[in-house]
Amino acid sequence: NNLKAIYGPDQAKAMVRIEGQPLLKKLNYNLSNLIVDICQRLLQPNITLNKNETENRIQDAQSKIMPILYQIKAGEMIVREGERVDKIKLIKLTALKEQVVEKDIYMSGTGTAMLTCFLILVVYYLFLKDHKKLKADHNTHMIFLALGLILYLIFTKVVIYIAQSAHPEMAWEIAASSFYMVVPIQAGAMTTCLFLGFDIAVFFTIVLSVMASLAFGGSFQAFIFFFFSSITAAYWIDQRQARKNFIVAGFKLAIFNSILAIALGFYSLSHPDPMLLGKEVIFAFCGGLFAATLTIGFTPLIEIIFNYTTAAKLLEFSNLDQPLIKKLMIEAPGTYNHSVIVATLAEAAASAVSANSLQAKVMGYYHDIGKLDKTMYFIENQADGKNRHDKLSPSMSALILIQHVKKGVELAKKHKLGNEIVQGIIQHHGTSLIKYFYNKSLNSGNENVNQEDFRYPGPKPQTREAGIVMLADVVEAAVRALERPTPSKIQGRVKELINDIFADGQLEECELTLKDLHQIAKSFNNILTSIYHSRIEYTDKTQEKKKEKNGTTKDSDRQSAKNKNPNAPNIAKDRTDLKRLGL
Image (cartoon, rainbow, N blue to C red):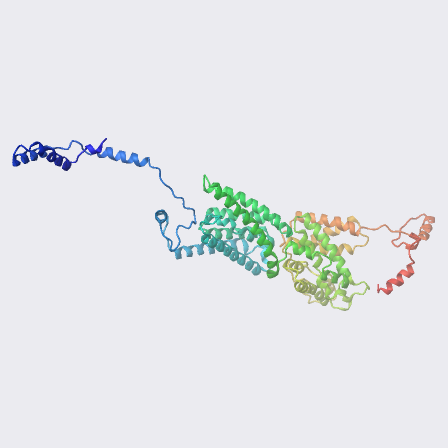
């Protein structure tokens, strides 16, 4: 094992000369040189290289050396411009170069753009183009969705820029690829659900999640996070929630995002770094709160810009102290009373069929505000018994009735009641026929009667809420006109009217089913029976005594307040006071 005792051929020859010449010094010089030369030539190597054994020993030695690994996190800054490159950084750069797949950035960007356009077109033509909720004011809805898509993609790019610019020694260092957890993509789904409904929010979420994940290098984890957290957020932001509930939904979303971050952490790494995973959970939690905060901030701006109506706005409009409602109460008390009952009927019926009861209620309050233009041409306001239509032709009377829809839309837009209420006003008569004046025109002998002149312009109700308001409007007016209404009369009249409206095709575009109509009729019957049921008729004492003598006990619906209550005020005085008030 002592390598110093082993000589090479040249070393051995030199040692022969060095050791031999002193021993041959008694001989002459030529003879001693000859002997040394002969001895050197007699030297032969007695150790040879065993290549196989050497190779085995080298491999065995290499296998015992533990490799030194350098972990490079996704998005980590390896070296900055102008910074000295040391040995470790050079190794990292070399390893990175070996793993980078070279591709044309322009071709890659073009491919991404083509995929995005293809996805948007497929979703639009298959799901959104003819969607019932988007038919009314279709262009406005599309602009809202497009701007939302652009806005939240800008948020994504800003977060990516911040992640890539962050100093690697910062206290909350985290991989740039994990910054997607703080992007408020969920706010897009929440606002879309709030204004257009959950089903539209699902389609919007699909497109936005794909595009945002492409911005993070096509990360599958980013897509899963965006999609599931956005769908969950949209589900928790119901259209009928008040703004105060957004905070609760935000905390729910933050907790859900944290759980989703943990699941993705274990999915991507079998042994995730606890510190890194903890930071990602904090990012995900903050992202949920950030999304809810943005939703609260954007909601009033969207309401103003796009004239949308949220549940909070509907609650505000449902206050009977609103200027337009108070004006209706003062100038058209009959219409006001009718509208309040219609709103009550619509709210109860909408609740019975799981529609938006608050929206139906507010539609009921405002559906006849157009009658403020000519209040005395509507029978519920003709307290003096004079019918202004007696002096008009049937076609002119029909035109006045039709105009109240147009005037109502103008008033609703003037007072910024929102698109949902405006559509409720437009659709609450659909394309129904004004039968009374149409028949009057036919009976007058006019041979050139065009039925379309006696129909409302429509469109037919497009939503369940608008359809319910149409039914409530017709039913309330008809039941009010019944003489001595009884539960059976009310039930029969309600059934007859709903059947007529259904047969006329007015409900064919609003998705109300036969089961819904049955529930609506049942709800109407309960309320109308309690409002318009027959009252007990009372008689004064003189009439009662006379009837007792005759053996009859028929009641009268007018009882003398003075006979009923000796302490009651004088009736003649009350009538005088009423005249002074103009009643």
